[in-house]
Amino acid sequence: MRDEDLVQKALEGDDSAFRELHDRYIGQVLRYAYMQTGDYHRSEEIAQDVMYKMAVHLANFQGRSSFKTWLFTIGRRVVIDYHRKYKKENNTVYLSPEDLGHKQDKHLVEQNILEYSLREQIMASMEKLSPDEKTVLYLRFFEGMSIKETAKVMSKTVMAVKSLQTRAKKKLSAHLKSEVNDHEKTTRTAE
Image 1: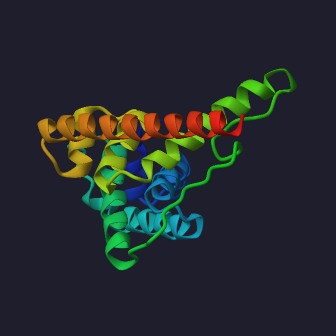
Image 2: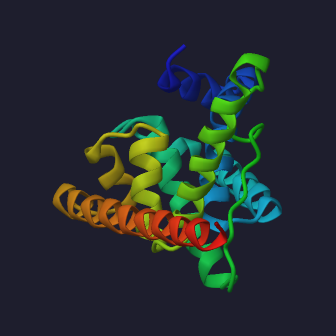
C-alpha cells in the first residue's frame, strides 16, 4: 500500500495503518539519527521523537512531497535541535556488521571483513564532515533520495544541494585518501 493511502487511513483512525507507517520508516530514521549523533541511545530518543512528531502532525502532511521526504524533514529538524541541545566533543560512529545488515557466510567471511573495514573507514571519515555534509550524503546515497527530495528535506535549493554534495564527496574522498596514506606509512614502518 502506498504511503499516502496509509496516511489517509491513519487519519481516519486506522491504528494498523499508523503502525505500518511507523514500522516502514523507524529503521531508516534510527540509522539517520545514529549517523548524525554517533550515540545509539540518543538515536533511539531522536527516532522516537521523530515518530511522535509524525503522529502529532500527520494531518499537516499535504502530499506536496513524498511521505518519506516529509518525514525526513521532521527528522532533520529534530537532529538540528539535538545538536543545539547536546554539543558533543566526540562523535565516533561504530557500526557492527549486524547493524550494517551483513550476515556472515562461511564462504564470504574474508570479503565481508574487508567490506566492513571499508564501511568503518567511511563512517569514521564521515564524522569529520559537517552535519549538513553528512545529511546530504546520507540522504542521497544511503536513503537513495533524489537531489530534489534532498533539497526539500534540507530546506535548500537544488543547486545548493548539488554544491554541498560535491564538496562533501571531495572532503570525504580526501579524508579517506589520508587514512589510506597513513595506514600505508604505518605498515611500511612496521615492516
